[in-house]
Amino acid sequence: MIKGIQFVMIALFFIGCKSNPLISNVAENNEPSLAYKQQIENLEKGFYFRGNGNEPDWSLKISEKTIKFTSLKQGYETLTADHAEPIRAMDASVKMYRVPIVGGTMIIQIMQ
Image (cartoon, rainbow, N blue to C red; front, side, top):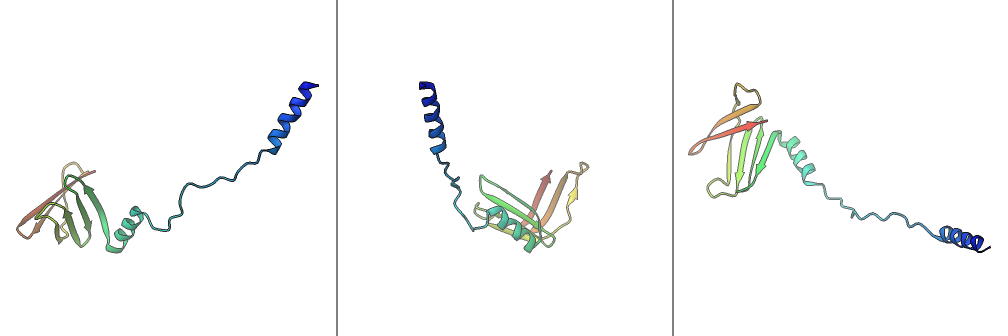
């Protein structure tokens, strides 16, 4: 008899429990992500290569028309030049650009 009452009590306990609907911890954000913004910029401006780094912070964007290098280092804030065809090394996964700029030549080497 006591086992029967315990069984009924446990059954009523589980039946009486309500499950809460899942509450999303992710806040709704309508702002596009940085990657999405960069992809749109790539499509609009025709960039086919984008690279970046740090120490000091820099970025490189290459399109069919221009090559643009930006940096936080003084004297190299923005360097823009016309596109040049890459020089391919014997190893096809390496490209080198020699681009004339004001005051010298910008040399860019890209390894895949």
